[in-house]
Length: 245
Image (cartoon, rainbow, N blue to C red; front, side):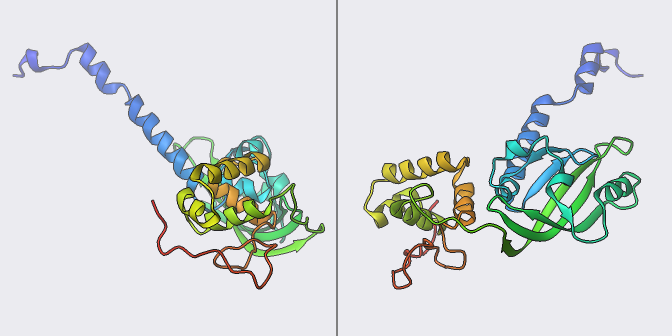
């Protein structure tokens, strides 16, 4: 016979059935951080295509912040370039005909350029019988067809010092190393980067550099990164041997 003293009481049984809330919150936060830091443009939608969350690379495509994409519908942002239709694809996914569906799309970026690529729609279910959600992966082709004349770099975009700081930041240099290159203090470098972040409405350095390329402040095909307005004979920014932590 079992010793009654060793049998769990009602309180112990209740504790065993209660989910570990702290662990669940911890992993949810970790997942949110990972979602935001993935360099591939991602969006999380409900079964009808309404965006519930988007990461920074996805928001950069429209020159906005991730929060401003929430509440918009993916069917309004992306346009299929073939015979596919979003509503039919979503219906097929809901009927479990496929767990993942790639579709060729076009869209108009925040800089006014027509862009093309592949949007992969992935079906996500919490449980087999739950209403599905959709995860969107965007693979851009990289070719652009400007539909509006590009803006010239100027005070409203970035000054000469700001452009140089952005080019050095794009190489992976720390604020201290950038300060040595441009003759400022680290606080001075951070001041310029903070001003640019506020001016362009971005939240971190990665998004700031991406925005600089979208705006044409940095030369798109130069490595090491260089300001787009720099003369051809001007020396390129120093290339770091190894980025500092």
